[in-house]
Image: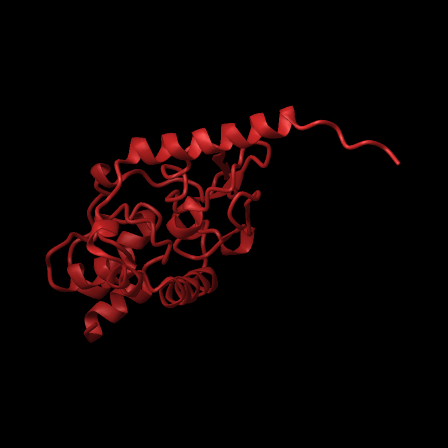
Length: 209
């Protein structure tokens, strides 16, 4: 990352939400530095974020592109524990490892690590993840801070090293790398969860001592 891209990246909120059209904040920063992307593609940064990028790049301030979303208050992901089936799909989707849990066990969100990126919501097969507004009436950099951005970036960097997705895929046989149809994957997870529930309901009660 060159000097200009690094300065741009430092001015971004580091939510890693991908709403800008790039895989992460660093990718967007590099695209802006290369003049391949506008300075108005980051909804979490909002109007103030656009002003920051305008000062760095020398470009004029423009409104946030509506195709990338709208500026709004910061939200946090919340998992409905009664519906969570422990599929672990949200663990891989979360860019900052804000979700903890193990296979077939309830997951939960660590509030301080959640950036409100919303990436966990579409991967949940039972729709048990929702968003709760954390900063009513505040949006953009009024709802976020430089300290939180630094924390999120550090978590994201650790997440990448921990997951090491590219290395894992390289070790898998070619057949395993073929993406599974999303609906089939969801169906199989839900069916497995229902099967476990049926088995539990049919199990005779444990006799009292």
